[in-house]
Image (tube, rainbow, N blue to C red; front, side, top):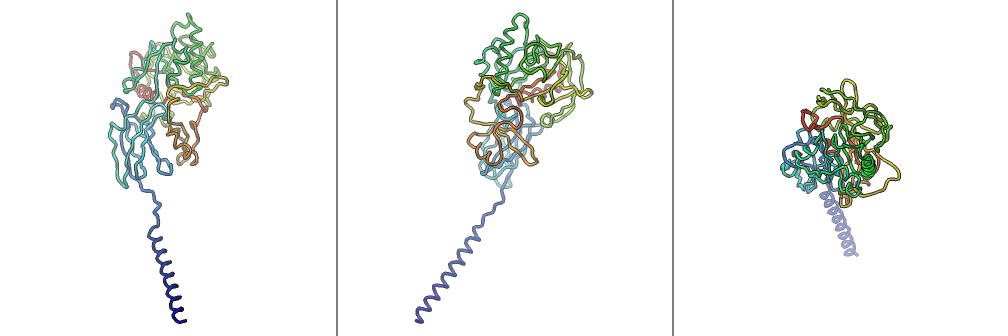
Length: 393
């Protein structure tokens, strides 16, 4: 009986010892949930490695798909706090659908990783085309950044399969020539441009080429002229602008960050230019205005939507592995970014939504500037603005 009691006591003591040992082990294995981070620095450059790019989105995700985000300053410089580990660093302008770069980087705790300038060049994903003009050569700026664009004609605009090859179309001032000899050609071009934008393509029109948007001949002198595809109630522009320097104010925060300034002089060195008379502020966003009069000088929209238009794939859309999503940052700041399709469900679970943060669901952007890069002449700081337009379409 005594032996039994001793054996029982030994077993109980052994059990207590085992419990204590397990408890000690679990205490030693307590996980530190503090996120360890390092820094990633670099300078966003255009493809030619010469022009710094301000206002670019720079971001990455941790293993739980939390976003780490910053933007480049006017000189292209950025510092991104990023989680420790091997991550993809994304660099994008606009919503990332047309210009973006991805870099694999190993981030170490409390260390700074400096990316080489060759890594941080912004790549062109978009297929870009332009229609040659008489007073404007946006293609010169595109090429000066190290990017490529294909010249097309007004006849090409009448072919939807041709138009659909591209993501961005630039309409140079003065390209809408000989309108009276072939109005049917321009009517067909406008109809196709409507389909192009409604399906996600983006266009930029400068000065007189507002007539592609609202109608008219080579320029417009009345509100609601015949033709065009933007509703007359949304925009009226008349060819009554006078030559000279105009003091201007940048009214968009993102553009101000990209430029590094918010006031400038724009030199209108031609005899007349399209002055914006009225616009729908719910439809258009004003990016630059005349300081003294508050007249809009540069506007954009992604609210274009028309029922009954055909649905067609545009540009690189059929082959892309990226999706545009809207992510909300701390401070309730919303940003539109392009992310790999594989991570979209995880981002949605964290509150992201598919599509841009504003505008019509499938609409591309329409940019319109009353100024342009003159085929000859001085445009001053507005040239920097046009670089922003190119990269943010």
